[in-house]
Image (tube, rainbow, N blue to C red; front, side, top):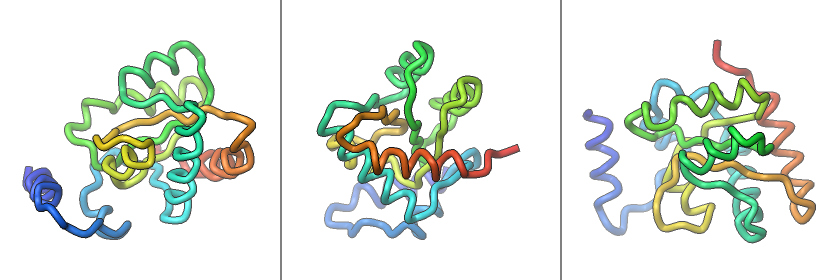
Length: 150
């Protein structure tokens, strides 16, 4: 509860500088594993921005869940600061069942911004596309190499 109030206070204050990667780690929820490194997080944001230009992303829990169930392939990116956890805790299990790579990043605000939205987003599915295939493959390889939680 204290974390949630700190996060809300940080978001409400206008003109607050963006928090660094290390500061964002203070707001992670307990299930945020595997967590992308700072470098991988930047690559994922870049890939999301390119995918958004070509309309190759699925955004939000309902939409991502629907397309994972339909068998769509891609990289699932989840925000580690989403509370309550119950909102999206089933998504990693769905990904593991279908052998889809997934990773957590520290901030839902940054995830939403990378997708071209003013609102925070807690989960995004990046679909492959030939226009940004090189960076997608790099991200796919690094996310797949992350150790899954036990």
